[in-house]
Length: 88
Image (cartoon, rainbow, N blue to C red; front, top):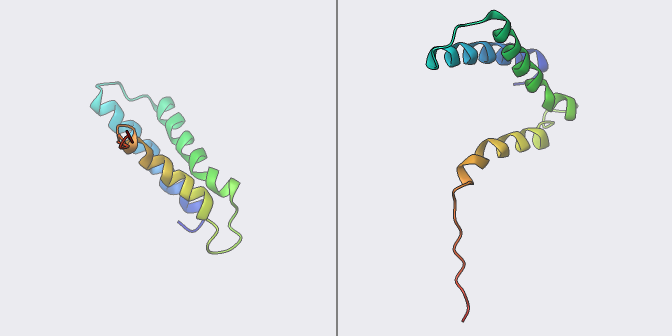
C-alpha cells in the first residue's frame, strides 16, 4: 500500500471485521465499544511501519515490512527441529 491513508482504511476494515468474526466464532455479544478498540488498535498498528520508516522514496518499506513479514512466518518455525550429526 503506497500511503498512510490506505493503511488506515484497510486496517479499520480488518479490525472491525476481525472483531465481528471473533464474536461470531466464540458466541460473544458484539459490543460497539470493543469493536472501536479493536479497530483503533489495528489502525495504530498499521501506521507503525510508516513511523519507523517514512515514505521518502519508492523502496522505503524494505526494513519495517521485512520485520513484519518475518514475524508473521516465525510461528511456523517454532516446532521445527534441526538434527545435527554428531562426530564420534
